[in-house]
Length: 421
Ligand code: EPZ
Image 1 (tube, rainbow, N blue to C red):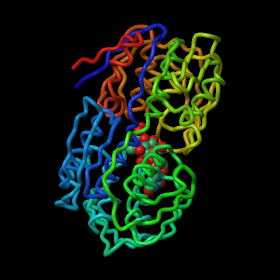
Image 2: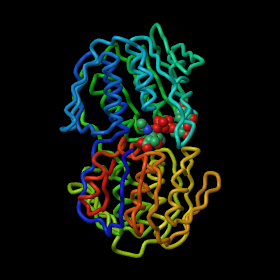
Image 3: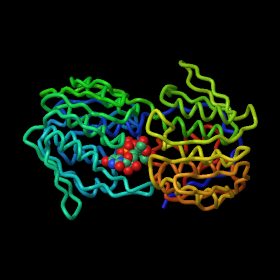
Image 4: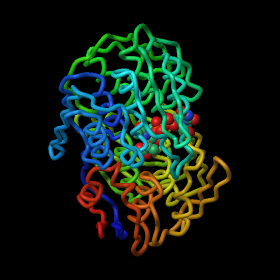
């Protein structure tokens, strides 16, 4: 199995260009199933998850043309040959469930295996099905976990989400886009990726208003057409490289980032004494080398709150600053798998339910650690950049599914990291 070997690297310096957003391109690729025509997608990151979803779309009958070197994918879902997503592909990526909404709306049927849980939590998907049922679909789950949704024609409805689930909001928006009548989603997720999906579907001829707020209104249309769309930059990748600059006390210019999408990360890093300069043309300059850095407290929340996906990289950083920090993870029930690994590197973190208490100013040392999810993996790499000696990170497939050219980008900033089989 491939591993990352990370050594103490000194302050990172230079500039990094952020790729297209993983959590935006996945629902947008799924949404290409809503029409018969060419959808040209640009700024597509070269990630394992993107390749898996493209294979899944092709297995459903879509024509997929990938020029991933140029971050370009062209999809034409003119003929859909099956409503059943192949189990082996669905098992590889839980975001496969995002093909259900468009498949159901386009063909009246969608069969997808229930995605399993993962390291960070049970990851239920009942809110997706609540939405499909409200739109008039029949949803059945077999003993083997195959979910089959069928309908003679979706009808607009009012849907309240018990939790502002990103995936459920996306699936319901896609299904409602071709429903008859108007759908209103209350307590909807407000992430920028939802706005990007709504913009894409509106360019296809859809009629979605309120994306980015907690109330989204979708007027169904009879059909949608092909379009061209460029995916927004990945705010979580941007946040990860901001943490890399902070933890190594470096000075890094982050290009291709939308400052509005990372306000909580900017605010929290500034509380720790990190200097952040926003220049709309150039990007964001992050300097961890100006003042002694101090602790702060973090509480993860659905957008626009502090993003759960930056919790573990931020925790790695907090082990190195002066003072005690408290982190509260409110989005996922089990997102502290990286704590054990960080403690094996000399950190001093105690968890108690949703809370983690981090004693700072720790001198980390290298260790053999395991990535449990892609963000935890990134956090361990960041810790390895400042730990004495060598850190070996295994199960790096998690990391490579979510960060395009991760090693290359870090090496260009002066990081001592290499990938070994
Ligand atoms: C998306 O996952 C992202 N993935 C996740 O990023 C991200 O952490 C998460 O949103 C939260 O921001 C993609 O976009 C592909 P949710 P998703 O549905 O849609 C509960 C990464 O690192 N819930 O908003 O699965 C659920 O248990 C990944 O890139 C229900 O209870 O997230 C969880 O506690 C990790 N019932 C919370 O909501 C449901 O029906 C957030 O889940 C659905 C969700």
